[in-house]
Length: 420
Image 1: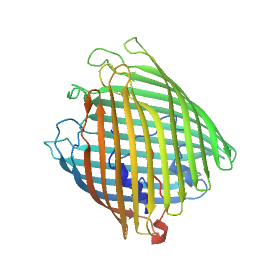
Image 2 (image 1 turned 60 degrees about the horizontal axis):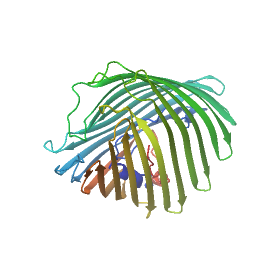
Image 3 (image 1 turned 120 degrees about the horizontal axis):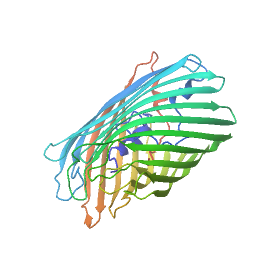
Image 4 (image 1 turned 135 degrees about the horizontal axis):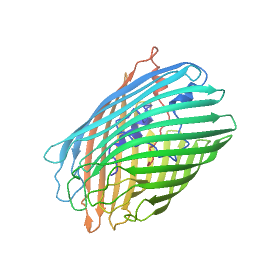
């Protein structure tokens, strides 16, 4: 399902509040193939730094169909958000970091269950030798909603040798996951018990740097082992091989990045067919004056507990435009499309969303937002009426550093969010 709260992050970023501090549900962790991701520890290479900042926020409004099913009722809602980032140290002496993102949405209990999204990540990093670093991150995620319950914990160790011309890296990941989804196509309930599985991944890679960006490659070797068969006695355990080629370029107000990744999944039994897909991510941003334009597209996979479906393949496209009216006001337009196909079945779902959002900087760290969006969901033999979402919000940015930043420093480049 497309996150309706995401629109607010686009326009809030126009006023200098980073996407990590905007009032949105936390994004899902990047896939193992996303080798270009930069961690906070990389910013502390030569000097001791201390970052301690966050935000609290409240958004409230009305959604005419929060469950996106036929015949459902509308509901008022309230979303509370807490975001916090802490980073201290240097790579020579050791870096510790903590990132917390929590969003909890309450609806009329007669209409929809609460929705809770949370990510808590603790990171440690140290320089083993000149240009050689070790980073360890422990991440816990919770994604609970009317239709999906997902809990996960992941331990990632990353070794990276980074020079001015190239970098070589390797990840070793281990995780435990619990997943339970409603059958939204038959309006069924949750499974009697969660499906639990363990994941292990080894990902080596290399990237060559040039003046305005980098290009590289990696390969992920993963094992997904389910602790038990599903409700029908089917075994979802499988092995994954996923090569990946990626690039990023930033020049003259234009930022472009992308990746192409063949995906091969071989199942332990004949309960599910082996999967061969071509996955990709692509996004671009262009800024000129007060305008920022962004587009994005991706094809990804995620686990599912839908009966007889091996995986959920998600195709997503997005376009956004933001305009900073002045130092205090910004407006943004966003359009998103997503299609989910459940492999091994004929089931699919599409969501189209478009909306507008406005943000105002009241000063002293207070950001107010107001937005409206409409969306439509389609499934086999089912076309949902257009749903309306109206909301207003207030966010307070908190900076626990010793020296507060002047107001002028809060105005940053707009960063339209792209699909994951």
